[in-house]
Length: 221
Image: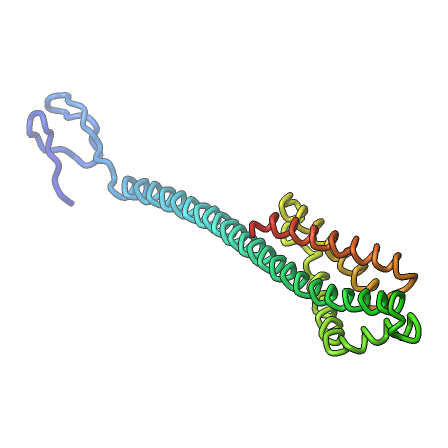
């Protein structure tokens, strides 16, 4: 064991002495390095634990934030797609309305010829002649009607049920579809007399086009 000496007078000391017997100086006990190192290790462990918890918490926060950003981006894309689908639906409506109008004008013309020129044997003969003339066009109208009905059902589901603009667009789509459906029925299955047919035909034709224009304006086109 290494010999100890008094730091004040230099006299040799025993290992268990607390006071120098020569000069009376109190002796300081050396601090054990092991105890000091243990404290340092505990502090390091605590710091590392705090940093680890903070890192995990930060990671969770960033994940939540990134998930929210992705969710908002997906919603914005869905809203954009809905508006594009609504525009294409409106365009299909315009084309179909024009086709139905063509058939309706022919029915009106043939019906009038029967009344004033007795060109046909009966009202039914006149109407059927007009429908026969437009047979190919009516087939196209009926085919487009199936697509329009399918697109309409899809547009009833909004990507964001709380978006006031989408709610308004959906309302206009429903109004347009209702007018389209009535206009289709009046022309494809005409009933009543000439005057009632002509009145309803003209009324729904104008109303349907008006609804088309309103939706088109709402969509920014």
